[in-house]
Length: 116
Image (cartoon, rainbow, N blue to C red; front, side, top):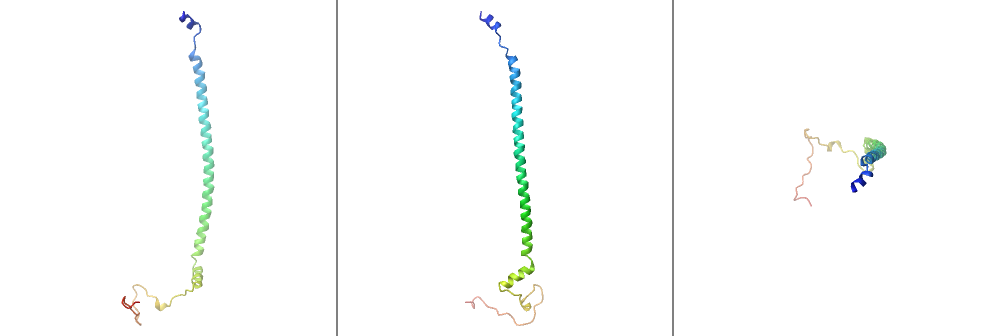
């Protein structure tokens, strides 16, 4: 009799399984699509921030290059040296490497023993 009861009320697994699997597949695709859209949006925001930061750094670099050129200007360096009490050297005190030695008084040589 048990067999007869089973045959009267059979469970149709394939009829329920198909729509359930289809719905699960659609739900999974929706979740993947939503995740991809969120990732793309986040990457777009990050890219925008990085581009604005790069532009800001380029402007800063250009300002620093201009500052370097200004600080290296010969006229500015000469003014700064004069402010510090420096002056151009006596032309006779300049010795060039490879040039003949000029006749004149020899510089006073000191030895280690003579030094205080």
